[in-house]
Length: 412
Image (cartoon, rainbow, N blue to C red; front, side):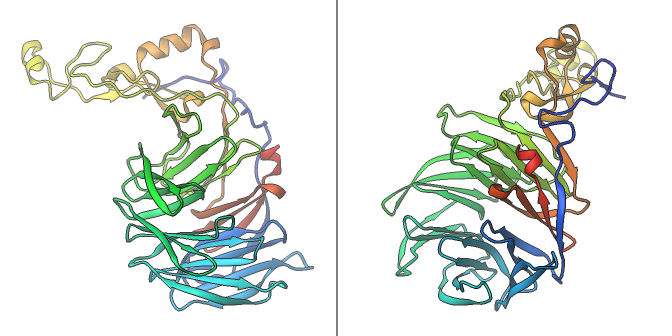
């Protein structure tokens, strides 16, 4: 059995930097969908939320006097909607569909009806993200056909396009920058000069498809969630190419949302785990895994090192890596496990004998205080939306129920 290093000498749980009792509180539960909920958008001006579902419905749920949410708008699309975005300044709703169509609706002032303004039949696959840039009067869309389009929101004229290497899965826009996540685990960073796109970078560190993106416009940091169970923070504004791993999920991450003012990040996964990260704490980059033909602790050869195996008359061993120093080691030399929050490891990971000894000899240099708190939603979460102004977080579950949480305590 692998040894575990406790965060405290007596083994008692250590409170996180977010507070000992910080957790989300469930406020409302909205059911009524008969199929998977594909997207949600929580409003700030009203106690209301948009939902789109595989049952082809687009619904606006509003809170009534009896403290219950009831649909104020219940509209059926010709095919299932797959992406949604709402602009509260103009009351314009963008809906992307399974057949590649993007529909622009104008919502009435009383929020009881909506009217279709225009329709773009753009993509050859399901639309995965839509966005309205009010300042530039542009509508952006991306889809699984690898295409990204932007059109004038007033004239519907096509202004530009871009093709990525793999199917587009998500997108965030903060002009002049456009960030596109794809099925291959890459994030393409575009700069728009006028209407001409320029690929300025491709961020590649994930080993699974990108499932969600979030952008902190204040700190100029991009957050990506992936099917490889990992969240990565890309420090775009630092211009040093730094990336920080956040590891607290054991299954596919389905959504990320950032609270810029509070320096908090929320992430959710397939198992129903909701994690709030303290992004104000100092972070360290994880080291690159070092290549080696033999264990860097005991010098035992790995199984592909045939020459050394023959010379030493031993059977080669499987290679592992210490997560805190990156050394290539055998199983016997990395039997210890520990969390290491400054590197993003909120779950126990392998460390080598040398790192274990350093931590045991001088624990004051290795702060193991948790930098995140987790909460179990008890159902897999398919999408997430944060309304930072009022401290509200919405999650859509695999059980077709939408939950609205009070996360003000986590933000404060």
